[in-house]
Image (cartoon, rainbow, N blue to C red):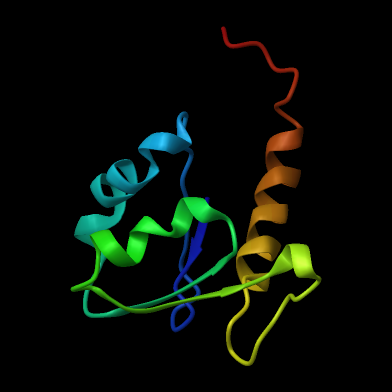
Length: 102
């Protein structure tokens, strides 16, 4: 998962082994980093649905774009910045694809 703070451009990459544990693990990993209210922009993947329920006191709004419906932006609502940063990470990690764990 790629998180971007739009005001500062700060990027946080998270890896989850089991997406069923996403809401709890997400809260554990980023809970102490949150200051103030959040506007959350995601795609339509249902894994994000519990965020508003679990973080209702922190998340002021959760908006999404429907990528499967060929919608990639709606006003300020888009995840293009995350997609861009994630592509840089994938390119960086590609050189370690066949590296030995030793």
